[in-house]
Length: 324
Image (cartoon, rainbow, N blue to C red; front, side, top):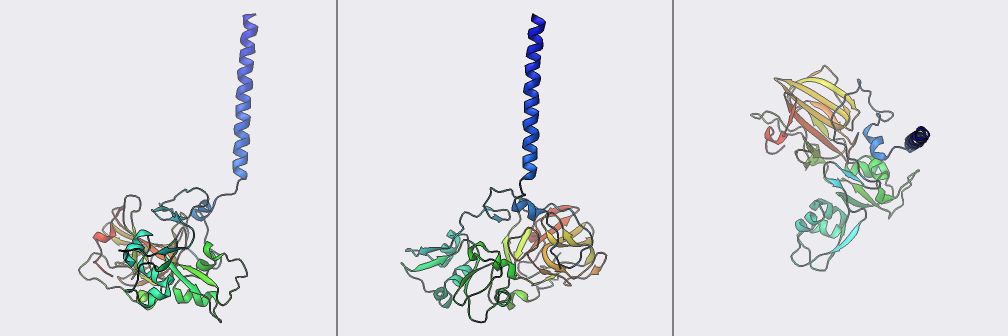
């Protein structure tokens, strides 16, 4: 009797284990059928069709942020909490600077989204309504004869930046209508100021690789600096050396150039539109090596710039002159 009861208990245990294993197998199969989320697709994307050919791949340690579905990504700064354009009423004591800081924007974004402020940025008053977008950029009203390409070129972005912007609600064939209002993410005016060549910075270890705005600094979670500028702006070698990589990097960096300067010094330039150099080429300080793009896992036209000393990523601002 005791033996029968023991066998019965053992049989029940085996049955429970078998059921658990079956459910685990079914769950695993279901997970494999679920489409990969956008962040996973971006992190391991291949070069777009028609892009300049690369010379193999390199595994880099780009930071990947796994966010809940529906949240947008900003490198190293967490999810964007607002997804719509709002109207803000100016209060006593407000300044353009304080409003920009309140919404984590820059003054140019407020100017380029509010024509009356752009015309006279020093004259604001209590009770005035100000249009505030959820992120940096500009609002543009489509005029007769405009095309996506002409608008993108005028604001220093790529056409896909405009069509892929959720606020624009655009779908193919992307027809524009005069009077239509578009949000240009990371759009900038006065493009010529961003296209000039940075100083060669004699007396400093490195020169700035391009002229732009520091959009993200060095930290424990982002061991590099991000330099924002216009799409297609030239990128230069920060120091002379030999190119050891000039191709697509699979882990979010997009088109990337890496230069070995000798003595344990290396620099990395990521998210490029394309490269102007090839592996094994010797380059001089200030030589054109690529153009600013938004390839890989990127939030707009910028260059992710690293300086490495004996393989360790250091703060580039400690090696660069104060201004480009």
